[in-house]
Image 1: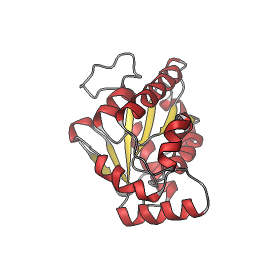
Image 2: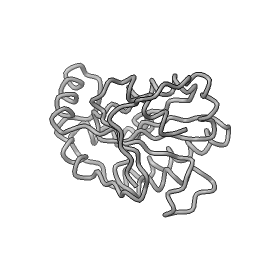
Image 3: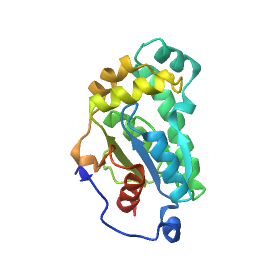
Length: 197
C-alpha cells in the first residue's frame, strides 16, 4: 500500500514522543534534489535520532563516477547499500533512532536496507526500517540541482537526474509513505513523524 499525505492536520507534542522512535529506522528516499538531507537533519533533531547521509558512505570511485556523469551500476551500489544496512543494524541494536537519507530507488535496494532488521523476513515488507518517499516533480528537482551545483554543494550533476527518475520504482505492497516534498520542511517533518509512530 502506498500511503500519501499532502499536509499534516495534527498537533502532537513531538519532544515527549522521541522515545517512540527508538528501535526504528527511517529512510528518507528519493532522487537527488528531493530534500533528503535537509529533511533528515531536521527529523533527526525532532526525534532525537542519529542522522546519516548515505552520500557520506559512497566510495571515492562512486563519487568520481557521478562527478564525471557516469551512472552507478549495481556492482557500485550493492556494496554501498550493504554498508548502509550494517550501519542501520548497529543503530537498531543500540536502540537508536537512525534517520537515513538515501536514494533507495529500487525495491531490491530497499530490501537490502530492510534486512538491517534482524527479524526481517525477505519480501514481507514488515520491518522496523520504514521508508518515506520525498516526492517532487522533475522541473523542481532540476532547478534544485542546478542551484546546488552552482553553489558547489554536491558531486552529482543535474544531467544524471533523468537516470535516477528512470530507476525509481515503487511497489504499493511495500507500504512506502509518500510525501509532497514541495511543502514547507517543518510540515514534511511533522507528517513523517505522524506516519512513523
